[in-house]
Amino acid sequence: MELVIVIAVIAVLAAVLIPTFANVIERANLSNDTGTVRNINEALLADEVLNGKAETMGDALRVAREAGYDIQKISPSADGYVYAWDDEENQFRLLENNNGNFSVYYPEGAEITADKTWVIADDDNYADFQTAGYHIFQLAESSEEVIDRLTSGTGGTGEVDYILLSENIDMGDTTINLNSNLSNVTLDLNGNSLSVKSDANAASGITVQSGATLTLANGTVKIDETTNKTEHAGLSVILGGSLTLDNVNLDTSEATGIFVQNEENATEATELIINNSQIEANAYCVGTNAYIKNQLVNISITDSILTVSYTHLTLPTT
Image 1 (cartoon, rainbow, N blue to C red):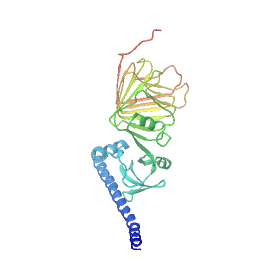
Image 2: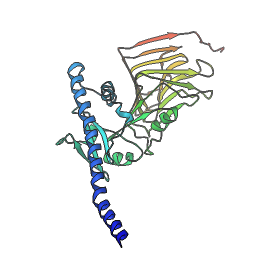
Image 3: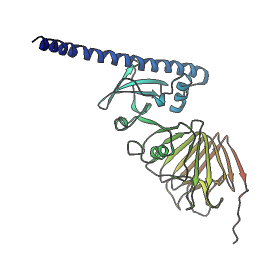
Image 4: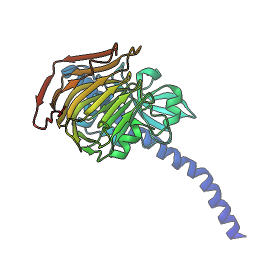
């Protein structure tokens, strides 16, 4: 009888204390997460005074990293919460996810607009954010993740808005071929290099086509060709695709440069924009086929240096 009474008392105490302990732990986790957001926002404000407002998610993440928070690699301690960046206010938020309904937990009183908010999504909450119309940011730490983010995406649609390279990545023999499943996506090289090879089947190292829109920014892209070094381009933009190079060092010295082409009498332009970049190529830096009638190609080059060598040029025999 005494044993039964002791067990009953323990059960009652457990029922009372366990939820209390859980709440204490949850509050501690939220306090840690709000402290992280507060400190990063102070760093963003200080950086904005010195260097101007962060223009991209990558810029905001770099400021956070310089403040000691590699936020793209950490998740909130509290369950059901995510970090997000408001590009209008240039401030981070701690968002609470209630079955796909999102609200700002911290800073108190802050509001969010989906098309102004960039979230660091993972497999568990990717679909919720995509359905709600948020911009989705993900980190790429391997060649497999680069392909996954640029083609199918974690959520199965390829609609990751911003991809950040965590380190130098060599794609090996894997070429990158992007079509209309990819729209308005930035691959931020984050000061790193992306190495890609053209293949023996005349496929460019990177091909952007059929309505795809890709921006390569802030780093080095190196294209090597495995066969005839002037047979085909290191990068191709074709059939209505759009490629932007922004602050990129494009090294195609072992291959030809960027080939831009559309079909005859096209209605949608193929577009190439090069800004604040350097291109080193063999045979040509930027080329297109003049014999295609009304192919509708738009090319814009500003504040950039293009250098051509003919080291591997092989002229046709006929």
